[in-house]
Image (cartoon, rainbow, N blue to C red; front, side, top):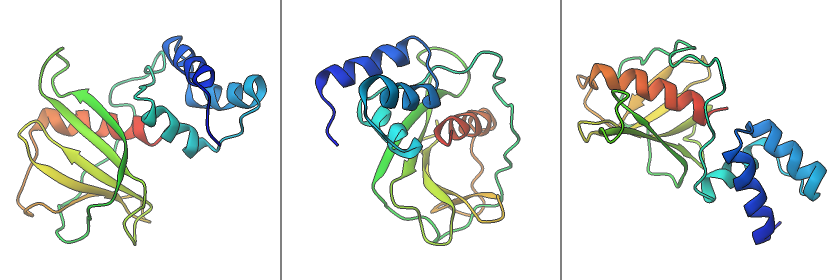
Length: 161
Protein backbone atom coordinates (compact mmCIF):
# COMPACT_ATOMS: atom_id res chain seq x y z
CA UNK A 1 0.00 0.00 0.00
CA UNK A 2 1.28 3.45 -0.87
CA UNK A 3 1.02 6.13 1.76
CA UNK A 4 -0.09 9.62 0.90
CA UNK A 5 1.92 12.67 1.89
CA UNK A 6 -0.69 13.30 4.61
CA UNK A 7 -0.07 9.81 6.02
CA UNK A 8 3.69 10.41 6.00
CA UNK A 9 3.28 13.78 7.72
CA UNK A 10 1.11 12.19 10.40
CA UNK A 11 3.74 9.52 11.06
CA UNK A 12 6.48 12.17 11.28
CA UNK A 13 4.37 14.13 13.77
CA UNK A 14 3.79 11.03 15.92
CA UNK A 15 7.51 10.22 15.93
CA UNK A 16 8.38 13.81 16.88
CA UNK A 17 5.88 13.56 19.75
CA UNK A 18 7.71 10.48 21.09
CA UNK A 19 5.36 7.69 19.95
CA UNK A 20 6.65 4.13 20.14
CA UNK A 21 6.67 1.78 17.17
CA UNK A 22 3.62 -0.05 18.53
CA UNK A 23 1.75 3.24 18.99
CA UNK A 24 2.56 4.29 15.44
CA UNK A 25 1.39 0.93 14.10
CA UNK A 26 -1.86 1.20 16.09
CA UNK A 27 -2.50 4.81 15.04
CA UNK A 28 -1.90 3.98 11.38
CA UNK A 29 -4.58 1.31 11.63
CA UNK A 30 -7.09 3.11 13.85
CA UNK A 31 -6.76 6.67 12.59
CA UNK A 32 -5.73 6.23 8.97
CA UNK A 33 -7.04 2.75 8.11
CA UNK A 34 -3.56 1.56 7.10
CA UNK A 35 -2.67 -1.92 8.37
CA UNK A 36 1.06 -2.66 8.52
CA UNK A 37 3.01 -5.39 10.27
CA UNK A 38 5.41 -4.39 13.03
CA UNK A 39 8.36 -4.97 10.65
CA UNK A 40 6.71 -3.00 7.83
CA UNK A 41 6.15 -0.13 10.26
CA UNK A 42 9.82 -0.21 11.20
CA UNK A 43 10.80 -0.19 7.52
CA UNK A 44 8.42 2.72 6.91
CA UNK A 45 10.20 4.80 9.54
CA UNK A 46 13.53 3.92 7.96
CA UNK A 47 12.29 4.85 4.49
CA UNK A 48 11.06 8.19 5.84
CA UNK A 49 14.37 8.78 7.62
CA UNK A 50 12.70 8.92 11.03
CA UNK A 51 14.29 7.74 14.28
CA UNK A 52 12.26 6.92 17.36
CA UNK A 53 13.10 8.70 20.59
CA UNK A 54 14.39 6.48 23.41
CA UNK A 55 11.67 5.44 25.82
CA UNK A 56 11.74 7.24 29.16
CA UNK A 57 13.54 5.31 31.86
CA UNK A 58 15.46 3.34 29.25
CA UNK A 59 19.02 2.66 30.28
CA UNK A 60 21.74 2.86 27.68
CA UNK A 61 22.96 -0.65 28.41
CA UNK A 62 19.68 -2.13 29.64
CA UNK A 63 20.08 -5.52 28.01
CA UNK A 64 23.34 -7.41 27.94
CA UNK A 65 24.34 -8.61 24.49
CA UNK A 66 27.82 -10.10 24.41
CA UNK A 67 29.73 -9.83 21.17
CA UNK A 68 31.14 -13.30 20.58
CA UNK A 69 34.34 -14.01 18.69
CA UNK A 70 34.30 -12.68 15.16
CA UNK A 71 33.80 -15.24 12.44
CA UNK A 72 34.60 -14.76 8.80
CA UNK A 73 32.53 -15.75 5.82
CA UNK A 74 29.11 -15.61 7.49
CA UNK A 75 27.97 -12.10 6.61
CA UNK A 76 26.96 -10.93 3.20
CA UNK A 77 26.18 -7.81 1.25
CA UNK A 78 22.43 -7.86 1.52
CA UNK A 79 20.23 -4.85 0.88
CA UNK A 80 20.09 -2.77 4.03
CA UNK A 81 17.31 -0.90 5.78
CA UNK A 82 16.95 0.73 9.14
CA UNK A 83 20.14 2.76 9.36
CA UNK A 84 20.62 3.91 12.91
CA UNK A 85 23.44 5.89 14.44
CA UNK A 86 24.57 6.37 17.98
CA UNK A 87 27.32 8.47 19.49
CA UNK A 88 30.17 6.22 20.49
CA UNK A 89 31.13 8.47 23.37
CA UNK A 90 27.85 10.30 23.96
CA UNK A 91 29.16 13.60 22.60
CA UNK A 92 27.25 15.45 19.93
CA UNK A 93 29.18 15.60 16.67
CA UNK A 94 31.50 12.76 17.66
CA UNK A 95 32.21 9.78 15.44
CA UNK A 96 29.24 7.45 15.31
CA UNK A 97 28.60 3.72 15.24
CA UNK A 98 26.26 2.99 12.33
CA UNK A 99 24.00 -0.08 12.41
CA UNK A 100 21.88 -1.44 9.58
CA UNK A 101 19.49 -4.39 9.49
CA UNK A 102 19.43 -6.63 6.41
CA UNK A 103 16.13 -6.76 4.54
CA UNK A 104 16.98 -10.35 3.62
CA UNK A 105 18.50 -12.18 6.58
CA UNK A 106 21.73 -14.11 6.06
CA UNK A 107 20.91 -17.85 5.91
CA UNK A 108 21.36 -19.63 9.24
CA UNK A 109 20.68 -16.53 11.32
CA UNK A 110 17.58 -15.04 12.95
CA UNK A 111 18.56 -11.48 11.99
CA UNK A 112 21.62 -9.88 10.44
CA UNK A 113 23.02 -6.59 9.25
CA UNK A 114 26.09 -4.40 9.08
CA UNK A 115 27.91 -2.19 11.60
CA UNK A 116 30.50 0.50 10.98
CA UNK A 117 32.60 1.33 14.01
CA UNK A 118 34.22 4.70 14.73
CA UNK A 119 37.61 3.40 13.55
CA UNK A 120 36.10 2.94 10.07
CA UNK A 121 35.92 -0.86 10.16
CA UNK A 122 32.69 -2.28 8.71
CA UNK A 123 31.58 -5.78 9.69
CA UNK A 124 28.57 -7.98 9.27
CA UNK A 125 26.69 -8.80 12.47
CA UNK A 126 24.25 -11.59 13.11
CA UNK A 127 22.10 -13.07 15.83
CA UNK A 128 22.06 -16.86 15.62
CA UNK A 129 19.32 -19.30 16.64
CA UNK A 130 20.95 -19.64 20.08
CA UNK A 131 20.65 -15.90 20.67
CA UNK A 132 24.37 -15.27 20.35
CA UNK A 133 25.57 -12.11 18.66
CA UNK A 134 28.53 -12.40 16.34
CA UNK A 135 30.58 -10.45 13.82
CA UNK A 136 31.58 -11.58 10.35
CA UNK A 137 33.64 -10.26 7.50
CA UNK A 138 36.47 -9.01 9.74
CA UNK A 139 39.69 -10.56 10.99
CA UNK A 140 39.08 -12.87 13.97
CA UNK A 141 41.48 -10.79 16.05
CA UNK A 142 39.67 -7.47 15.41
CA UNK A 143 38.38 -5.76 18.54
CA UNK A 144 36.20 -2.66 18.09
CA UNK A 145 36.97 0.33 20.33
CA UNK A 146 35.55 -0.32 23.81
CA UNK A 147 33.12 2.63 23.68
CA UNK A 148 31.83 1.35 20.32
CA UNK A 149 30.73 -1.98 21.79
CA UNK A 150 28.23 -0.29 24.12
CA UNK A 151 27.03 2.04 21.34
CA UNK A 152 26.64 -0.94 18.98
CA UNK A 153 24.62 -2.92 21.54
CA UNK A 154 22.40 0.07 22.30
CA UNK A 155 21.70 0.82 18.62
CA UNK A 156 21.14 -2.84 17.83
CA UNK A 157 18.56 -3.08 20.61
CA UNK A 158 16.76 -0.05 19.18
CA UNK A 159 16.88 -1.45 15.66
CA UNK A 160 15.38 -4.77 16.72
CA UNK A 161 12.40 -3.37 18.62
